[in-house]
Length: 200
Image 1 (cartoon, rainbow, N blue to C red):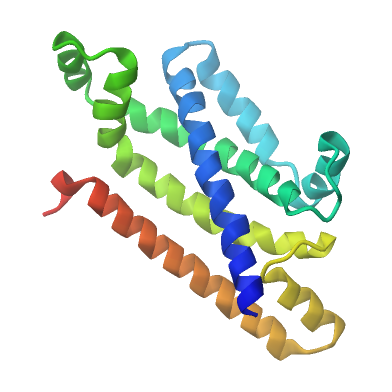
Image 2 (image 1 turned 90 degrees about the horizontal axis):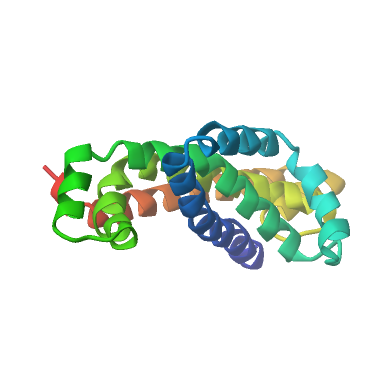
C-alpha cells in the first residue's frame, strides 16, 4: 500500500510540475501574441477532451515507449496539466496592473527579467487556484492508469474489484482523497509563502 501511495505521488506531482513549466511560456505567448490568444486556448480545450485512458493507450504507439511504462502516464498528465493551465496563466498575467508593468519597464527591466521578478509574483494569487485544480485532477487521473497496468492507488481499485474485496476499494478511495487534500493544503501554504504581501 505504501508503495502504491509513493507511486501515486510521483505519477501525479511530477506531471504537475512539468505541466506548469510548459504552461508558463504558452500562456505568455497567448497573452502577448494576438492571434495565438484564442488559438492556443482552443487547441488546449480540444486536447483536454481526449479521454485519459485512450491517451494512455495511444501514447506508446506515438512515442515508442512500452505499454506498461509509467512514462506514458507522466507525458499524458503533463500535457493535460499544460492544457488546463494555458488560459489561467494568460489571465493571471493579464491581471497584473499595466502601470506596474510600465514602471518596471521604465526602470530598465527587460521582458524576461520583468516577467520573472515582477509579473509572475503578482500573478501568483490568480494562478494558484488553477494549479490547485490541476493537482486534484492529476491525482484523480493517475488512478485510471491502473486499467493499463500502471502503478498507483488505482491498483487497489482494480485488485479489490477482481477479488470482490470492497474494503480494499474503500481504502484506495480514502487514500486518494487524503492525498488530494494534503497536496492542496501544501499548495496553499506554498502560495502564502510566495506572496507574503498578500497576508493580512
